[in-house]
Amino acid sequence: MRHDLFSTRDVGSGGSLLLPHLSRLSLPEKTVQIWVLDDTCIEPACSALANTLSLDERQRARAYRQERHRNRFIARRSILRWLIGGYLSCKPESLRFSVTQFGRPVLQAPGAERLAFSVSHTDGMALLAFAWDCRVGVDVERRSDGLDIAGIGRGIFSAFEEETLDAARPDSAESLLSIWTRKEALLKALGTGLSGEPNAYTTEDDSLLGEGYWCASHNGTAISGWTCLDLVLGPQVRGALAVSLEDARVTLQLCPVSNWVNTWRDGSAALTRS
Ligand SMILES: CC(C)(COP(=O)(O)OP(=O)(O)OC[C@H]1O[C@@H](n2cnc3c(N)ncnc32)[C@H](O)[C@@H]1OP(=O)(O)O)[C@@H](O)C(=O)NCCC(=O)NCCS
Image (cartoon, rainbow, N blue to C red; front, side, top):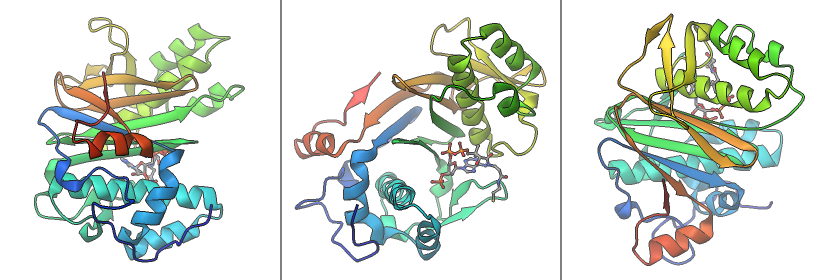
C-alpha cells in the first residue's frame, strides 16, 4: 500500500475523513467500549492520521521491516490517539505516552489516569478497549493449528489450566485459544503482561454466570469484583476482556470505514453489538 507516511493532513471532521467525530465520542461510566479494527481501517487511518504520531512512535513505525506491520501499527496507534482525544476532549496529536518497565503504555496528562485503555492485535484485526476508573485488559488471537501446546504454556499456564488443556486433547486448539486470551487479558489489565508470575493466576469458566463468562484467581484466591468475558470475533478469531468493574456493560464497536460513514454521518449511535 502506498501512503504519504508522515505528511501533515487535515484531520478535521469534514470531507473525506471517515472517522467518528471527536465531539460525538462518549464513554459512559461502568461501560467498556471495545473498538474492533479490521484491515479496511489501515489505509484511511494512515493517510489521515499518521501525522498525529509522536516522534518516538514514528521511529517505532520505521523500525518495522514489513510495510504491512508498519501500516498496522500506524493505524492502530493513530486511531488509539483519535479515540482517546475524543474521550478526554483533547487533540489526538497532543497526547503523550510513557511506557512502564513491563511495556504498558501510560498516558501522561492531568486527569488522563481516569481513562483505562488496552490494545491488542492479531493478523487482520486489532482491539482497542476503554473504560473509566478501572483496570482493563483485552486480547485477541487468531487460531492456528498444530501448535506445540506444552511448549507454549510452560511457565505461563497454571496447573489447573494445564489440566483443562489435557482434558481437551486431541482437539485442544479452541481450549488453548481461550486460556491464552483470558490470561493475556487479565495480565494486561494488571499491567505486568507475561512478566512476573503468570502461572500464579488461573482463569476458568464462570459456572455461575454461564457461557461466555470466566473468572480468575491468584494462588487460589478469587479475584472478585471483575467482569471477565470471552469475545467471539469470527470463526478463527477469539478474544477476551478483563475489567476490574463489577457487572460492567460491554459494547463492541465495529470500525470498518464504511460503517463509520453510515454510523457517524447520520448522527446515530455507533454500531453496537451485545
Ligand atoms: C503484554 C503482552 C502480553 C502482549 O502480548 P502480545 O500478544 O504480543 O501482543 P498484543 O497485540 O496482545 O498486545 C500488544 C499491546 O499490549 C500493550 N502492552 C504491552 N505491554 C503491556 C503490559 N505489560 N500491560 C498491558 N498492556 C501492555 C501495548 O499497548 C501493545 O500495543 P502496541 O504494540 O500497539 O503498543 C506481552 O507483550 C508481554 O508479556 N509483555 C511483557 C514483557 C515485558 O516485560 N516487556 C518489557 C518490554 S519494555
